[in-house]
Length: 73
Image (cartoon, rainbow, N blue to C red; front, side, top):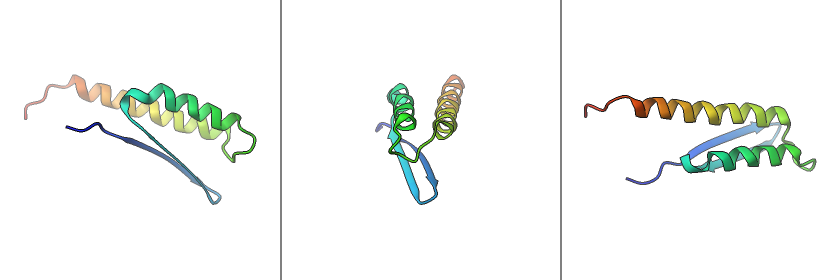
């Protein structure tokens, strides 16, 4: 089975930010969100970074909880 790719996107005011990452790259995408928020040339705020980081963490938690359930099929 291939590696799953997670897609995280923000579309606002004509700007599109799309992040693709796998489960092994969670820390990297979180760091990237902070770097984008810190870049004054981007229309990407700390609020944007916080909201997207929350989504990344929630998805990771949901996947971990799902892995704990036994599979009957």
